[in-house]
Amino acid sequence: MNTATLPKTPSLRRTSLALLAVATVAGGLTFGAGPAAAEARTSAAGIGAHCLWAGTGYPQGASVAAGGQTFRCDTDRGVASWSRGPADGRPSTVPNPGAYTNPTGLFSAGARQPGTGYNDYCVGSQLIDGTEDVYQVVAARDGQLLWKAAAPIAQWTFDADAARPGPSGRTASLCIDGNLT
Image 1 (tube, rainbow, N blue to C red):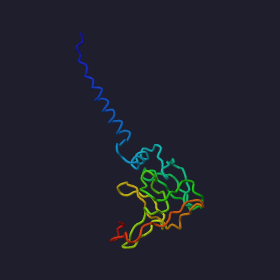
Image 2: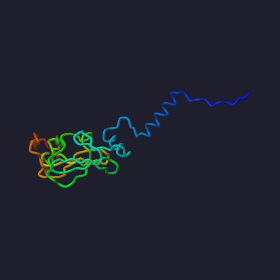
Image 3: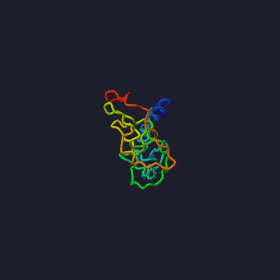
Image 4: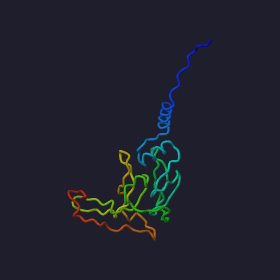
């Protein structure tokens, strides 16, 4: 009679948790991460990296026209981003709502939009109207996306039927020690 001892089988619960942990690490999932992190993980994995423009995803290699220029969806250090082509005067093929809110989850780095009141800032006691510039999405050192002034508004070609941002509703009285209050 054979009296070999069979190894104990791990409990189903322990096995399931171990498999979930392995799948999470292998899949690059991070619970609670924002859209920029998800976009970066997708790009880094090289699977279906998409660029965002006004909340719509575009695949690698796609080109769009906005403000009289062409933008191509590429990758920059493994993250989907827009590279700007030459000014060609083509009408816009994408919506251009303006730089009206935080770009995270709406635009990828490299996208440009006309400024809005969201971009107002102060230099000393002088109010600088956000509508005077074109803003580009850039990634900060911590990976967060933000709008940064990139060109004078004269370099943005508005389509004939496009809404143009109006002047700021703010006044210089809101500038205190260089801060917009």
